[in-house]
Image (cartoon, rainbow, N blue to C red):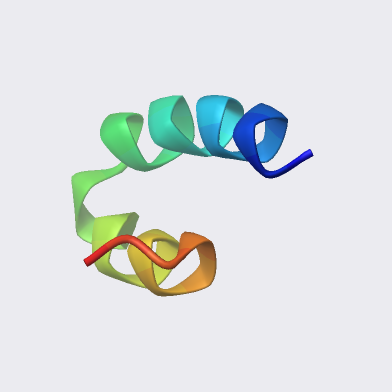
Length: 30
């Protein structure tokens, strides 16, 4: 389940660089 969620989130945060920090915190990206 975690992998499925990370795939779409990666594209989302990639399209929005200004929101990348917020998305990284939610997904747990360092």
